[in-house]
Amino acid sequence: MKNAVDNAWIRKAAAVAARFPRERLHPAVVAWAESRKARALGPWAVAFSGGADSLALLLLVCAHWPERRARLVALHFNHRLRGAAANADERFCRRVCRALGVRLRVGRWKNRRAGASEEEARMARFAFFERAMRRIGARALWLGHQQDDVAETMLMRLARGSGTGGLAAPRPVQSVGDQVRLRPLLTVKKQEVVEGLRECGARWREDRTNAGTAYFRNRIRHRVLPAWQEAAGRDAVSGAALARERLEEDDAALEAWLRELRPFGRGRTLNLGVLKDRPRALLRRALHRWLSAQPLAGELSRPGFEDLLAAAMSGRRTRRSLGRAGFAVIRGGKLRFERGG
Image 1 (tube, rainbow, N blue to C red):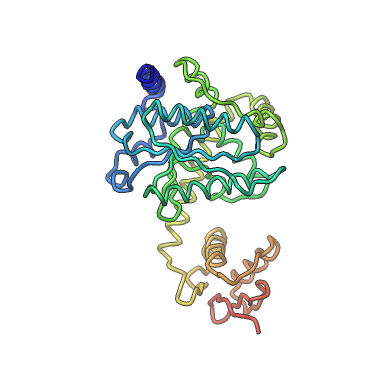
Image 2: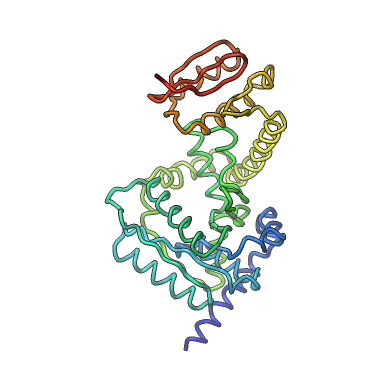
């Protein structure tokens, strides 16, 4: 009986791969997966919740890169927020991975609390991914974000005033420290994923909380996105995906320009002279980088950041508080952090 189940799931993986050949996946991810770097980064980890997107992802990775299956590890995080349903998700993931011959590591949210925010849950999940990947020696994490996620993320980040870096998320190939996150389904819509799985006879787990409106993303998904599509009178989701690609290109161009100018000096200083008369966007980016490199600096409000940016653009002598530990000081064409006292 076990072999029959195994063969059934392997056939489903092959059927899903036929429905979504490599040409339908994001080309940047496919290119990465076939590079020398991919072979050098150890096992591949796949985030596997048991939902439609993550199931399609796991089946596609198994079918398109069968030579990697023996070193593939699925990661499932049980948030323990939905009682019996969450435990059923975990059991489903165990059955699927056992049938495919894929190792599975499961984490559980020990310190979870009722009413936890979407961000708290996400942080706990990725903290588990990080720990699990370190233990198995993996530096590549595959994630099931698809094209609808691009549109939802863009609308959410527009609401908080994100720049090109934030609006270019989620990226198909994203470096995070010494790890890389891969999202091959950014070229595929949610409905296509669901229809593809149904056609191939692959069942998945449905998280009922996704149908509610308690979380901001769900409100965007159920209320805003359909209205936006209707108002646009066109495929706004594909348009958002195309805009994300363009924003990523612009973001990469600004990063490359900043690296060429080399404005960061010893002692975590920022040389404002090399940025003089450059576009404001470039100095804004450099200032963000400088602030993130100051371990003792406190949080800077948006108006506070804009004031410091204006001072940096003018190059005038400045001393501004960066929390209890010290100050941002502009002197002699350079920005540096000085301890308080």
